[in-house]
Amino acid sequence: MLKLHNTLTGTKDDFVPLDPNRVTLYVCGPTVYNYVHIGNARPVVVFDVLYRLLARLYPEVVYARNITDIDDKIIKACAETGESMDALTGRFTTAFREDMAALGTLEPTITPLATDHIADMIAMIETLIAKGHAYESQGHVLFAVESMPDYGKLSGRNLEDMLAGARVEVADYKRHPGDFVLWKPSDADQPGWDSPWGRGRPGWHIECSAMIHKHLGDVIDIHGGGQDLIFPHHENEIAQGCCAHGTEYVRYWMHNGYINIDGEKMSKSLGNFRLVRELLKEYPGEVLRFALLSSHYRSPLNFSAELLEQAERSLDSLYYALLGRGETVRAQADYALPEDHPVLEALLDDLNTSEAISALHGIAARLNKAEPADKPALKAELLAGAGLLGLLDADPTGWFQNKKAGDDDLDAATIDDLVAQRTQAKKDRNFARADEIRDQLKDAGIQLEDTREGTRWTRG
RNA sequence: GGCGCGGUGGCAGAGUGGUUAUGCAGCGGACUGCAACUCCGUAUACGCCGGUUCGAUUCCGACCCGCGCCUCCA
Image (cartoon, rainbow, N blue to C red; front, side, top):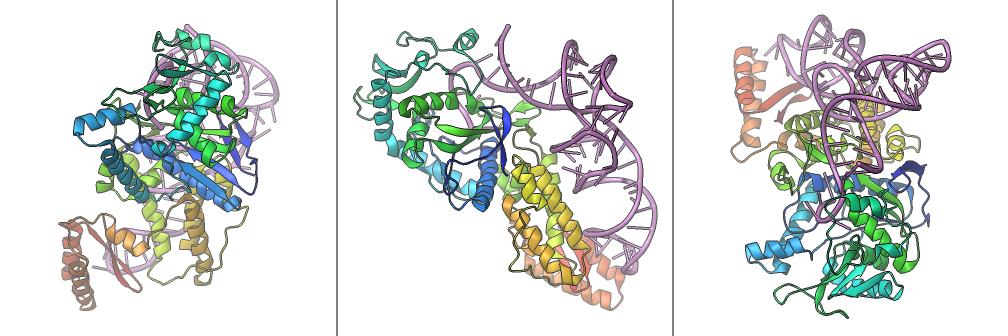
């Protein structure tokens, strides 16, 4: 039984899909006005693990992750670079896909673009107006929060509490200060679409509700995103989705914790972010992925060089187990992870990735000391368990030889040649020469290991 | 002011009303020409104060500290 922490109930609940033959998952994707930082990558990786898990448990999983390609931050970025909106959003959408692929994430089933769904948003806004939940005012269309009795149920706040906060934008076109924009007018130099309320553009929240309705249905099973989306974004999505279609909209809400730098939240607005693109120049994507999965998804994760070094060493030890001690072991081909496997059970418990990784180390330890006859099954078990987490997909030899390769490093042929010279020196019992070569390679960042089937080398 | 989260060994980080988390780093040993890898063994822990209990790191209460949200945000 899969258990998921549901923000709506505040508890870890049994996951029971609406339709066990077709599970629906929606995750808020990026606003494409910049390269994404590692904090943006966390939900993508976390929900990638959930997607892999659901795919194992149910016959069909429909996973949608949007691209927000119309937004005031995008308009601002275009003004700064002089690019057209299409060019800018296209460029960063491609970069996002590349970065996420480097982190070993699977493509969602559907990747809807906001600008492809303007008509759906307009239709939804019209429904909200018709049902008395929204109103037009000075070219804007606003959602009337007072029209929804349980507004605030996701974030656990009520309208009075919110007004006590200092940052509510009080605008004269709002009936209630908590009302939020569904549609706003565009100036002549701003991108806009014709609508019943004049030329304008959608508010932030409506795209997700409209795209969920179009692609996944009136009610979906799981909606995920970062904690900072709980309010206002997801609260307002609930308001739109529930009021427009008279349904519960989303059955399980999941939110990942933040990534911190020196104990402070990483965010674009604080400026303390690390771009995935930059990190990928220093670390293999799998190291970043492993680091993101090393703690529970709802806990804050302090991001540091130490974290990444530890992630890399942990991965090394798992890959060492796959590599073996020089012998060639082929993973058992027909292996299937049993239902009560520790890796699976850890993930079923609200995606306990730390415990799942711990279980992987347990398999690796058994593999390391297994009799040759038992190794194919254990190797298959390790690969299958890691596969649920999207890990250990690389060729083990390639992992060690390529992970830190830079342009000015020794190439493989040179290394192989030096290794051959050292092997000959060892054969001649000229250990001084052998050690000299080993030291020379060590200075170049290459470690040697003598196995019973010859010397192998690793980089980094 | 309102709402919420957290404090675990040198570091990272799970979990549990009683008995090993796990990884990295450390220490001792085996293996090795010497190493590396691996294996065997080993030390270091649950913020503070009360309460419940035979027993609390775990449950309850207070306190201290840190963090987040309160209409830009993953």
